[in-house]
Image (cartoon, rainbow, N blue to C red; front, side, top):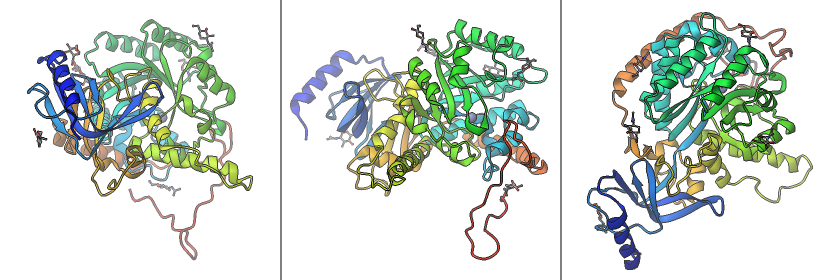
Amino acid sequence: MYDPNIALIVAIFFTQVVKIVANNKLFTGGTIISYDESTKLPKVIRDGALLIQDDRIHEIFDLAPSNGTFPHDTEVIDCKNKIITPGFIDTHRHGWQTVFKTTGSNTTLSDYFSRYSSSVAQPLFTPEDVYISQKVGILEALNAGTTTILDHAHHTWTREHAVAGYNASIDSGARVYFAYTFQNVTGFTIQDQLKHWRELDAGKTSNLTSLVMSYDDFTANPYGKDTQDLVELAKEAEIEVFTSHHVAGPWNFGNAPEDLHNAGILNTSTAVVLGHATFITPYSASLLRATNQHISITPESEMHYGMLHPTAHLIADQASIGTDTPFAFSTDVLTQTRLWLQSTRQTMYSNSLDRWQIPNSNPVSVAQAFLLATRNGGLALGRKDLGVITKGAKADLLVWDGRSPSLLGWADPIAAVILHASIGDIDHVLVDGGFVKRDKKLLSGGYDDDVARFLDAARRIQQKLRETPLVPQVGMYVGGFPYGEQYQVDVQRGEGNGYGPSYV
Ligand SMILES: *[C@@H]1O[C@H](CO)[C@@H](O)[C@H](O)[C@H]1NC(C)=O
Ligand SMILES: *[C@@H]1O[C@H](CO)[C@@H](O)[C@H](O)[C@H]1NC(C)=O
Ligand SMILES: *[C@@H]1O[C@H](CO)[C@@H](O)[C@H](O)[C@H]1NC(C)=O
Ligand SMILES: *[C@@H]1O[C@H](CO)[C@@H](O)[C@H](O)[C@H]1NC(C)=O
Ligand SMILES: *[C@@H]1O[C@H](CO)[C@@H](O)[C@H](O)[C@H]1NC(C)=O
Ligand SMILES: *[C@@H]1O[C@H](CO)[C@@H](O)[C@H](O)[C@H]1NC(C)=O
Ligand SMILES: [Zn+2]
């Protein structure tokens, strides 16, 4: 229904407030999943409209303004039958590994360390390989509706390798927190890396890619000069985000919140994100709450590699969603969120059924999952203006086709997206107010050229993997615990179990 009074107000608003110089876009007629600061819940607006001015959301209308009530230079995007959501936020990713695609389908975390990790992969990559793997990896994320990425960039083996991934992030068109990793590398010391980081920081050219920091040796080297110097630099440069891998339990990888706190990086104005934080303890969790810092749950990675995350549901209030290594499994945030939702339901239901009691309600809502994938990601990065559709927030947006066969018949747009949609239902993706995907097509210039370069790198690198035997998993794992026999599932009657080879 069309209300003339609203149209009049809208007309006055447009003529008085919207200046012709601005780059205006009006998304009209769609269902908008906005965020209500007062209830702290998503707010669904049906048949509303969204006015974008340059890089920000300028106004949200409960009723779509009628034709002719806005300046003629406003681009109107008809969103009838569409659902509009914030872009997804991925708070843990390693884009440079994209080129390994499908070669890790049967791996454990221990295989990962011996074959694909930053400590062993350097000989496989030229700087150009890092560039194209990172760039195409980020295009994959944009295509899937991920508009912001915290990239834990541990391909910093030389100045050239480091810059290649940084440049690729800038060139990708996504909002990227490029977390330059400080790590022990032969011939390029952490002191060299600190110098390099300062140079890159001084020469900043991008508004969308932020140069930030990552470090995984707080536990291995708690009081050394390298650790102290990089914490000092993080404070001095007032970096926006700092990230580390925390993987506990028998994996024993270290970097617990208390280690970062002792080093003086947890309780500053810098947002700290701990990748995984599996087997996190109550004490660590309380430190995160006290300092308002976050973890990044990467559901598929944690299941695939055997990191697990038995207590993730107990710290979901300080959590966000990440994807991890894009070569080994799906890395769209939508799939990760759905896996988190249903596996958390399974964990919580087990509480009841283990007591032989029937659960009297469903323990997690789709709205909670939606917030985890959007607003919580923004909060993890210290950005209240990311992951939400509110007045003044950044215009990082997704427009979903509400009439695709998977969604048809939806009443609840949040359930439609979180439980029924696939990334193939995303029509448009906007970052910072600009289209990066439109009518289901990425707008990245030179895509065909990128594909050719990427496939060339993939062919070479994957060939080298084939020629390198896997390290047998026997005796003691580096974390101090023994390898144990892993039983395999049997999907075939008879003698074989159907496991088969890996078809690489
Ligand atoms: C409004 O304009 C659009 C295109 O500019 C057109 O497709 C649509 O039919 C118009 N709606 C009305 C109600 O006139
Ligand atoms: C990275 O980008 C900068 C700025 O465009 C350019 O000067 C530099 O040569 C690039 N480096 C590499 C290794 O691509
Ligand atoms: C960054 O933003 C400023 C202010 O909006 C603008 O003047 C500048 O051109 C932008 N730089 C780039 C590289 O886009
Ligand atoms: C890195 O190397 C420095 C010396 O070069 C050493 O003090 C430190 O313990 C090493 N850190 C790790 C985590 O191996
Ligand atoms: C963090 O710092 C604030 C002061 O800036 C202090 O009040 C608070 O106790 C500190 N929290 C922890 C856990 O150390
Ligand atoms: C996994 O696949 C690789 C080939 O990529 C193979 O060498 C390895 O034996 C496989 N692992 C298992 C447990 O079958
Ligand atoms: Zn990781």
